[in-house]
Image 1 (tube, rainbow, N blue to C red):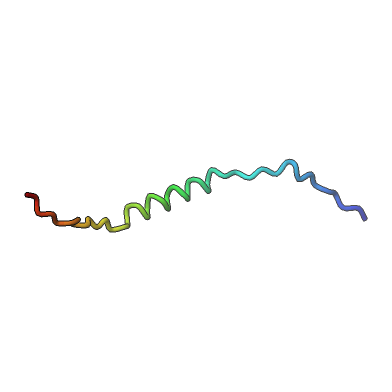
Image 2 (cartoon, rainbow, N blue to C red; image 1 turned 180 degrees about the vertical axis):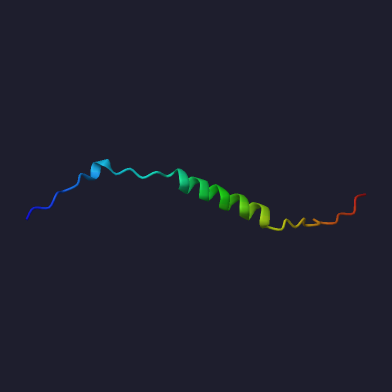
Length: 46
């Protein structure tokens, strides 16, 4: 009994959904982080 061998040259990986998920995660983490403003150094000017 012979098995058919498939050509692996026809397989293509579509990365568009991966890019979409990465951008969604990036936007989610950018919007969910709390931005704290540091008061800085107090300087007495002359």
